[in-house]
View 1 (spheres, one colour):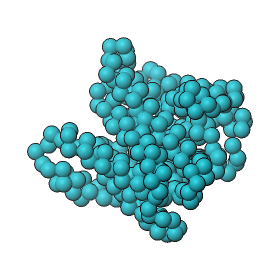
View 2 (view 1 turned 30 degrees about the vertical axis):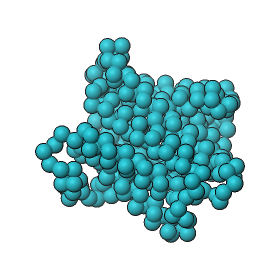
View 3 (view 1 turned 60 degrees about the horizontal axis):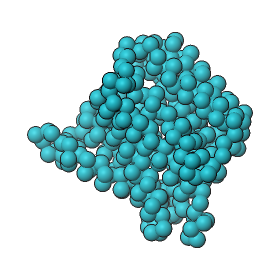
View 4 (view 1 turned 90 degrees about the horizontal axis):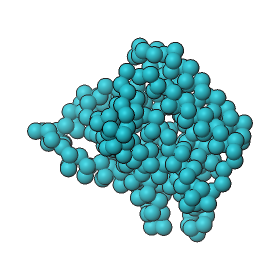
Length: 299
């Protein structure tokens, strides 16, 4: 992994805490996801127009588009439902363990090989993720909540699926015999499909007396700049990750390095939100940073 790819991934991860701060406390997370997904479509179209990328895409890329959109939907909706039904201390470490899914599928299905140094670094990073939640007030035994476990695992798998699909799409365009795939063109259609999935889910789950259009308008009327800012940061972060894949970044290493956002989130949560447990969480974040250093050292 080159220094250029490392910088790109760290820049991407550094945007996550700001996005999360903007979204924290907003009502109706599923409606927020739908709103942001629609804004991603707008940003992707504007991005394509600025760089001169095509707005249309070859039908050869349809499997990648739907694979990525399905993975994103499973990740976002699985996370939403898991956190509604279970405790953060249980769900969060599992959801953020997508590098395990990526390594397993890469080895078992895609015939990928991984160095022991990379696997060690991933293991250290994930150990830090679990340590962050250790000692939280809410302690739940997963065996007593199989639905919560299944949802958390589904969210983890969804993150792994879209990461694998995205990396394959950006690195194997030449094998399809078509023009090179630009990130903005790919994202236009991924986000269109994702927006449709979110809209269908909202139609099936809406229990409010108000129509969705009124709820959607009310959300934007109350928090336009927070939604716009979160959408812009999320889009920029995603483009950076696709760029890292395009330049040859290993998907397992990239998804592990993205967990750099966790120590940053902990620091910003303490500074701006005055959350408790800063010392313990910062120490656990040191384990994450150590794992990242192992991954970087291993190349």
